[in-house]
Image (cartoon, rainbow, N blue to C red; front, top):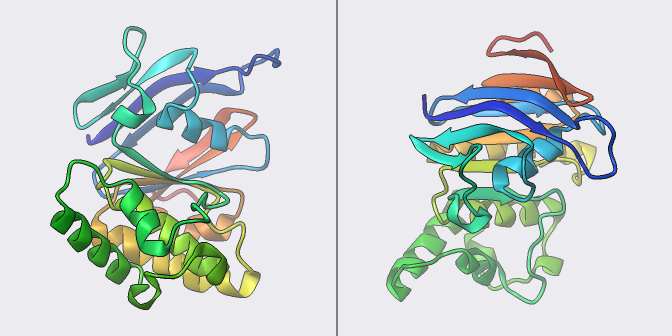
Length: 224
């Protein structure tokens, strides 16, 4: 098993109940998992816990045999090797497309960085947009830059928070297909959260359904 999450629980300081309750997940390498739920279901909180942006009450997570957190250990976010694409993309407005992608590349030579940036631009079909700034791009193009920036450092797992929520309805299907292609081409183990069942049907290999922090359905062939 490439990635395993066991007994993950969390409660916000102003909450009287757990916002995530005994969350469990197993993933094979290259698998795409969707966490599906309405607003307030705890799905984005799970992503924040996995990324190390929140500290869990209980639980453990390991990726490829490496413990990221348990009752004794807590690996800092920057040490986890996890990539994240935020709902608003979080691109740096003062940086060009290639500069945004370059930002996350560490411990590489200048030539290696250049080669990796070109590889990512080709992957997301933005070869002609390297010198453009985020405000010069469409919503779909900005999303692709955010994905390229997250994938460039070759993370163990890619997390995506509501990746289609900022897109116009007529763009959603084509962008779903593009994202699915990127994830499969890179064999990227991924977890994305959404409230849209069509998103889950289009991309996910397995689906976890959350309601008020609890798992109410899970499986590779779950009917959604």
